[in-house]
Image (cartoon, rainbow, N blue to C red; front, top):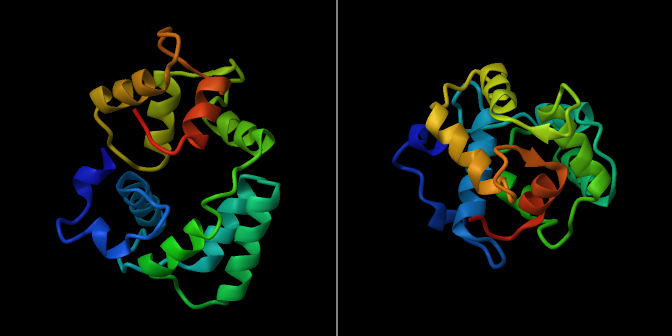
Length: 165
């Protein structure tokens, strides 16, 4: 998975904060790295703003994130500032409506589930070469009924959970 490509110099403990767990910091790093396409360890706030707007996210958490990005100005974000920005709303939860919009980005065929094929498509669109076994593991960890697919309920539960199986 993406953590295998992370430089060995990354230490989650450097960014440890009350209320954030190791896996959350590592996931933030993976997300940050997706936006840091040039490998400069800096992310343009306009790119993050564009992603939030492209997802058409609504709700208090999305609004607060956009306000925080506006406050950032045009200065690139390093990972420490990115963690500050992302963790400012750690106690708040995205609405089911927001989660549904994100779910639909994965379920582009409108089947009501995220399949292995959907994850393969997303990985390809992001330019990531994720081994099939890793994608299968993602599905199995989120799949609550063992049918090999992630339902909206599974997805919402996964995205609002504080720790992951």
